Image 1 (spheres, rainbow, N blue to C red):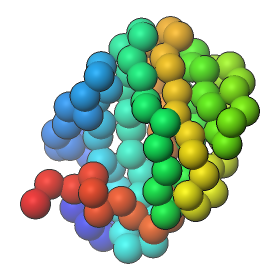
Image 2 (cartoon, helix red, strand yellow; image 1 turned 90 degrees about the horizontal axis):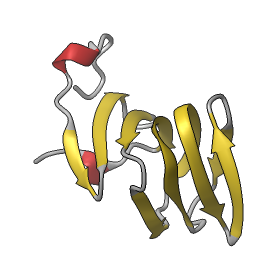
Image 3 (cartoon, one colour; image 1 turned 180 degrees about the vertical axis):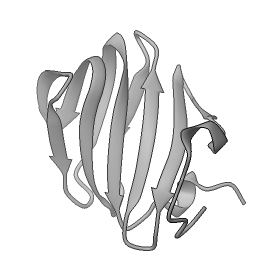
Image 4 (cartoon, one colour; image 1 turned 120 degrees about the vertical axis):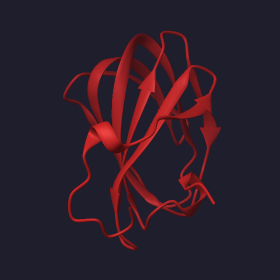
Length: 112
């Protein structure tokens, strides 16, 4: 799918990301990646960091996010910027969907 001009949702296999989270890797190139994450209520995105800049858009649901030690409640329409190597994570308060954009793309999200 890398560099595919058209990526149809029906053709993208959902991956179990663990702990009540399902991931779909959508369109991507070397410089940019779009990923949909579906969270069940109570699911946890453990605190972590990576060398990618990440923007998260809340498509639906409600989440408590922690970014660089600061916690805030976010919901539909909110966005967050996570710069390279900043520690971040979340707890899903109401089942929902996050859309993540990464620069560069996350090789670790791809199947071999």
